[in-house]
Length: 179
Ligand SMILES: [Zn+2]
Image 1 (cartoon, rainbow, N blue to C red):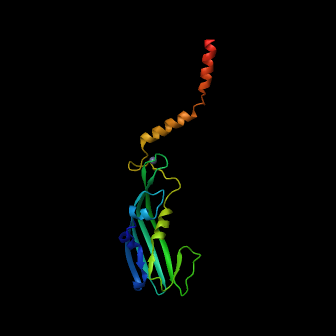
Image 2 (cartoon, rainbow, N blue to C red; image 1 turned 90 degrees about the vertical axis):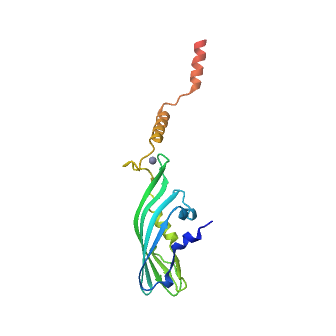
Image 3 (tube, protein in one colour; image 1 turned 30 degrees about the horizontal axis):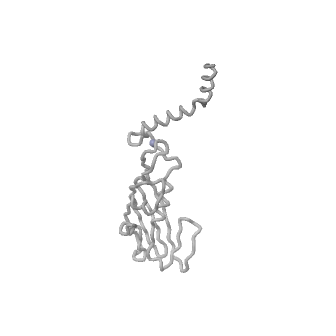
């Protein structure tokens, strides 16, 4: 079940905003990713400061996102944090007739769009923060691969590097010796 109270924070009631600047605080956590499912993300804690500045027919949105996403390390398969510290901008332009925009940073809205939901935008901004290879940096104690797992992986690699051994030859040799 979608937590409607939680997701309300992502609805910006633009019709009620007077010209000038308005601040909104939002939080992306596990609940967010229960709706916006992503196989790489198991949990999150990202604080979002959204600054909305309204002029007559233009609404500028500045997203400041700070925190971390929780994922799984590709090497040791243990939990790891992906730190998030980024800014993104979105511009809403009020037009008379609805149309699509070629520029992903610009959205056309009409007078009817009194509410603007920023969930999908935030989701996409956060996805950009996920590196192609997710792995512990091993630079500090809070960000280290599980040593037991590394040992196991190394053992496995050594074993697979040993020349292929066919036990049937053993059996044959044995027969010859017994003759
Ligand atoms: Zn790791």
